[in-house]
Length: 401
Image 1 (tube, rainbow, N blue to C red):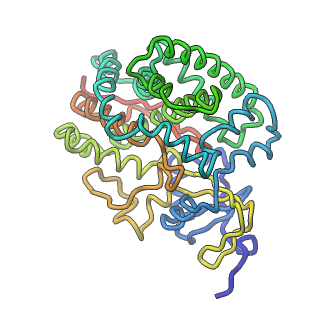
Image 2 (image 1 turned 90 degrees about the vertical axis):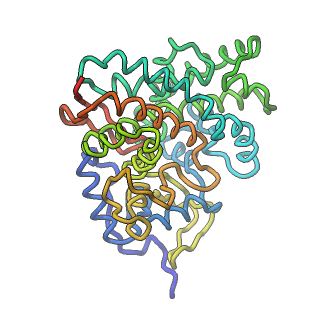
Image 3 (image 1 turned 90 degrees about the horizontal axis):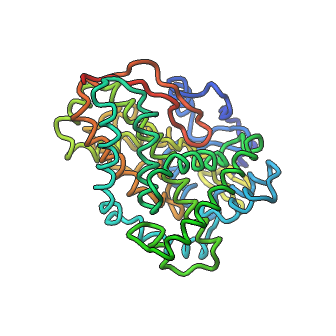
């Protein structure tokens, strides 16, 4: 079969930057796009829509995260944000990446995540206690937003009262991965600069007074310089706050929309929470698109992807691939799914904090489900943008107090 350059194929268009593309419309448009085939065109590149193709592009060492290239496109070639992007573990490959992963991996093993579960239970318990008698809340503001920031503050060894600041810095720094980075650059750079100063002071305190926290653990490892350690701490923060907040919010929304499943979870939280989290992560991934750029010419399925081609791997459609999953468009926490979803990526850059994120969500659901009977939506959820981390801006819920 003749190899065809991807640029010469007649492909359906996907307007990734459409600001109205969110919520039910996002689901519908991607369902229709998935039915056209495994590949679509979008501004700046192409979208891979099936699970097998997504695995290939995420695992291939001929592709990498295009952070530096995107920075160049938007004219980011100096300053605090450029330095952060240049040192971000997402943008480092090969032996340097393996070395950095080796330094932080011990803090993110399943065993390490298990050790933080009592902290998670205490935090979600205290947050829910504030609203337990109300019977109604905006779950984003009262639960989903403060929960992961307080957990990450405790894990890092930061004072609990700093959790709000950590959330704010994380949310802004995370926006470097969106397509509006040029306009938001001043505020992102301010967040980077402020967090560097904060983390540097925290590192000094932990050098003098080590504890059982992540930063104390990281300080025991060898680094090329202080900037390398500082950026690893930043990567932990950015990867562990907005992501978990958004995934938990979508999870509570989905379960409020499926009351029988919420009741089943409430009746048996210890056995169903892990499977419920896996289904939430599959069904509504908060990283619906992961970018890659070709380091060389690559041929896949008789299609040539020239060097510097940008590809978006679509976890949303990949996680609902009918070739991989039975009843893929059905949300069902009782159904054991065999294939691993694309939500956390694949290959060398597979999500570092996956064990921690799963544990946080499991503990939240185990605590909340038995205490929020009759959970339902109290209004329309406010969906965020699919550009970057896809979360909810508001989630009105009610239950029988």
